[in-house]
Amino acid sequence: MHDFKIWAPRTRSMTLKLKSAELQMRGPDCEGWWHLEVAEAVHGTEYGFSIDDDPAVYPDPRSLWQPDGVHEMSRVYDQSAFTWNDAEFEAKPLPQSVIYEIHIGTFTPEGTLDSAIDRLDYLTDLGVTHLELMPVAAFAGDRGWGYDGVALFAVHELYGGPDALKRFVNAAHGKGLSILLDVVYNHFGPVGNYTGKFGPYLTDAHKTPWGCAVNLEEGGSREVRRFFSDNALMWLRDFHIDGLRLDAVHALIDRSAIHFLEQLAKEVEGLGKSQRRRLVLIAESDLNDPRMVTERDAGGLGMDAQWNDDFHHALFTVLNPGPTEGYYTDFGELEQLAKALEQTFVYDGIFSRYRNRIHGRPASDLPQSKFVGFIQNHDQIGNRAVGDRIAQIVGIDRAKMAAAILLIGPFIPLLFQGEEWAADTPFQYFADHEDPEMAKSVSEGRKMEFLAFGWEPETIPDPEARETFMNSKLDWTEISLAGHAQMLEWYRELIHLRNGSASLWEARPGASRVSFSEAGKWFTLSRGEFHLICNLSAEKRRVTAPDDASSLVLSSRKGVEADDNWVSLPGESVAIFRRNPHPSTF
Image (tube, rainbow, N blue to C red; front, side):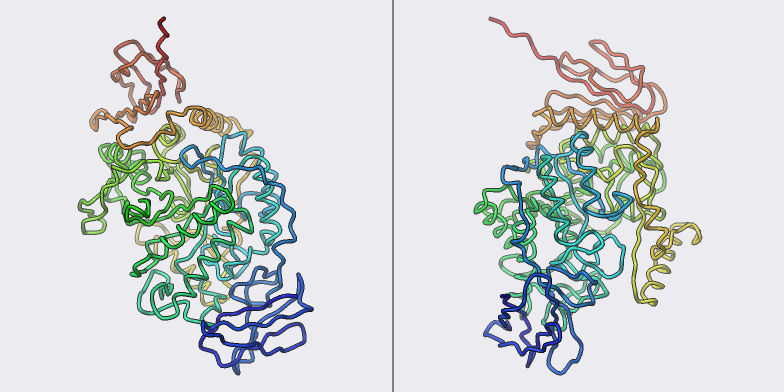
């Protein structure tokens, strides 16, 4: 027995296509829902819907299983059939976490969830606590980043489908790893989105970079909001996901008295309490608005954390000085990196040249553990013309400095796959649009975008070419090579230092103290019992020693010399000191 339901408030008739049968559904009810119970429908039964006089058969917008792709019939999926054995698992609090972002299709040669299970021991040995999956919701074509999802309740079949995701989460929990899932609620992909056939999921009252906005406040928005809230709850409840990363929430246009994100935060909190689980929501937002992560009772939206682009931009431009373009034009000084480390946002109500307006609001009264910091992520690598990584751009020595700043710093650290061994493989933008005209448009658009920055068209990888996707797959044999192995050990030491030091989880306002010299190209960061000294110059630099008696615990290069007054560092190096415990007196 299966109860088929579909929200279609504007239709006159709804036909359920079930194998060779055509069954008229009952409805719509007062809320626009059509219903029909079918005794013979079981797990694996194919079905679809026909609307009014339209002869086409459409998949279910809430389909849990699309084994033949997003254009084809849906299949009934029994959520209760999987046997879980993770009842004893408990996620670590976000302030104590180290997040590692992966793209399932490129993380392993096979590009599946099942093959990724074989890498879980590697991640736990590295010290990772939370594994963040780029979107796995079904999208058109064989390959893509996942941000063009259209069957949002179904797992992309080439990754293994819904059962594979459950196997992956179950295995990760067995290793002590939490799973975060990237979800996209600000738009649907351009191909395979049939929601508009059924109801007003989009509205032309607002525009976004992807076209019409998701309908969160116009007529019919109640069920549209339920669609996305139910999707979030499904991942957390039925797939045992521990938290969601919400893509580009600044594109969720909602002037309702209760913002969609506030509603979602309340519902997720309720689910977590009922299941006695620690569930989290992490937002991606470029608004620099601290209300995103302010508690709901204090007038905020109640997100648990937010990505901090200002930290990335400030760090990247310090490591890679020179002409800047786009949003990097607002950055490039050590003073800005110091401000990010001490006060979270650089643009906190000051003028932005890039935006040509005042941007942001101060967040210095909030714990910095409510913000995620990163050197690299899918956007910051993949949105470059050739998808090159930080070590290729600034060199190994500066990449080591960046890692130390990130992992000793006040933000929740996020790593992108392969970063820890300075992977040579790029992460490029790739897609597989089935419509030839759209594929051509994407390919040409990519070339035109970077032509303006001086890139030769022939050097820009074609996002529609399978080769671009294949080139983006990690090469795991690199980790045994000398230079890569050295970087991997550096990351492993830093991560284990962070995981074993409670003072590095402390991120109360004002807990980070920075000093620097723009002319001398050095800066220091003090947090808890640790003192980091960084020399960005190519020459040896002498910097004032930490105030308290300290011992050197890690350095990126040999030749660090220290006494009670001074620390001398080789060029382009970083050293980390730890305060010596004072002997007890009786």
